[in-house]
Length: 113
Length: 112
Image (cartoon, rainbow over all chains, first blue to last red; front, top):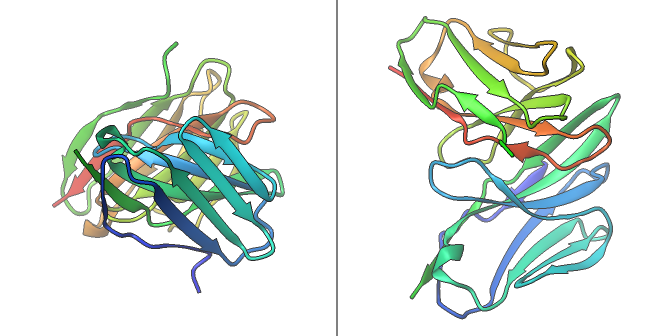
């Protein structure tokens, strides 16, 4: 079983739709949870960061973490064509002075005008 | 403010050659990490350096090595290149005590 599972899609939605992206993980030692957005041929860009169960909202984006189910989600409201990108979930771990992120495969999202 | 800068942007090598990739972190960031992103996959952790010391290493062969310099910039070296080393190599930096990684645009390596 992979440490982090993410449905790669692709996912195609009309402009204005609500988008739901999800990841599951198996390692209960993960301490913090992130969502990155990656445009084609660019580096990942941090969207959301949280370290506790519950919801965190930032504009049109809401990150949800359920540690008991080992499940995280990202919701995008009123999706725009500019949201078209690959969305990567990442789980963070600090261990013996080392800090690393374990990423999902990424979900490719297309928002159609 | 300059973000994380990486060079070269693109490069093509042949099997068996060696490559050096360079990274300059955000000013004030002392921790640098390297990730490999194969097409269609998420980034995979290779190394973390902090204050010039290796703090963590992912599941990569000894052909991969890195170092960090006194100005906190970093180099990733890959020897005896294989076709499977073709990927986007991402450098990321972090402020001390913070968990958030800021990534550069990456160096795209093609091995023929």
